[in-house]
Image (cartoon, rainbow, N blue to C red; front, top):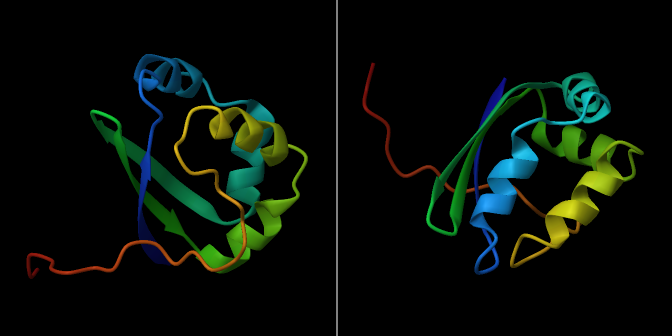
Length: 104
């Protein structure tokens, strides 16, 4: 299992719409995420900055599987209108580098 941290940024004035859109994730997208190996996806917002924590079996495989998935394409088109940088699913994304963790 991998834990991947991501950072994205909203376009100015899109905070409320982003939260409204995420209030209910489409069932087909939920199923696609789970089928691609996602076990948990959390998003926190600080102003326009979004921080994601994803627990997934294989992040790169998940990205490949969702790149052209019919449930993900309309979702990504919707997110493109809200985010400063559109996710291009190029395969180069590896998430944020971990700096520190409180020892167990």
